[in-house]
Image (tube, rainbow, N blue to C red; front, side, top):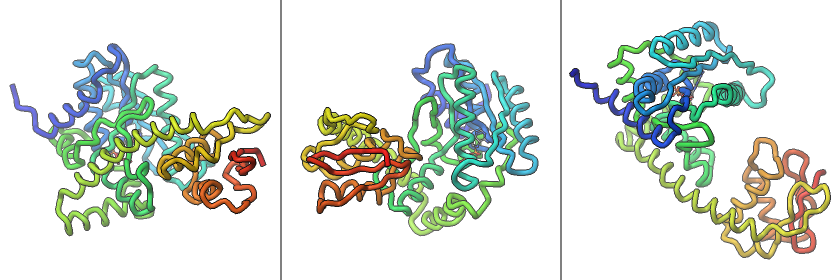
Length: 332
Ligand SMILES: Nc1ncnc2c1ncn2[C@@H]1O[C@H](COP(=O)(O)OP(=O)(O)OP(=O)(O)O)[C@@H](O)[C@H]1O
């Protein structure tokens, strides 16, 4: 039997590991742009899934932002059918009118389309092709914007239906796997666009760090993410328990959330309190789900630097006031 090239074996092993435990007979959909990372992932999944009692499928999203994107999506779909994937979908999305810059808009449209595909096919997982290099870039970008442990823990291996099997596989390996298998790859012009911070990190900042500090930098940045993800899980758990104690029975009619006890909040470690406030604010339905550090600092000041402040306004038309020893949220 011919020897399997090492990069192909590495990608298959990573996929096999992440498919372990999924319900037998289920459909796993690979989210494939046609780029080398997700194509190597798709080829490995087409090979591994049937041997793991699963059905490999593929979805490619056409953002219709560049010329030739529809032809590219069709070519990816044709390749996927020839590789034995079923179902195979090429889904077009409308990026116009979504909030944020074009990159953010394309991302939200893509994730919504992938979620919808997963629901349509009752998929047990949607696989994303982010690699260890993508994780290192994410950590570096998070460091640069002053993120806390949550941001520095990078992209999770699993969130809901989404899995990232390749977070321990380098981009060089996915590229080599594609070459070894003779796979056609379709370059995404966005990946070369210097308008995006990630492109500049990929093309300049990270290679400069590798040059200055050695090739282990990429692995080390990705490892930081793994370590912090574990610490985060513990802090989240502590914050969830503290929230149960801090939430009072004081739910005013029409208020967006139960009031929080100031003495309980004041007794918490700052890292736990900040998390609790984030989670509470998410429950208030702040648009985008999360608060900026400025909002959290303002909420924190209601507890730790109290001098009779008025309403702290949060996004989404919600205000928070301190009154009679509790923090109260109200619609403005
Ligand atoms: N147009 C798309 N259709 C389907 N999935 C996509 C699409 N674009 C990105 N994805 C998914 O999101 C992952 C990350 O995409 P991103 O463009 O950030 O990374 P990338 O390193 O360029 O990946 P790739 O080499 O697979 O394009 C991809 O590996 C893929 O799983």
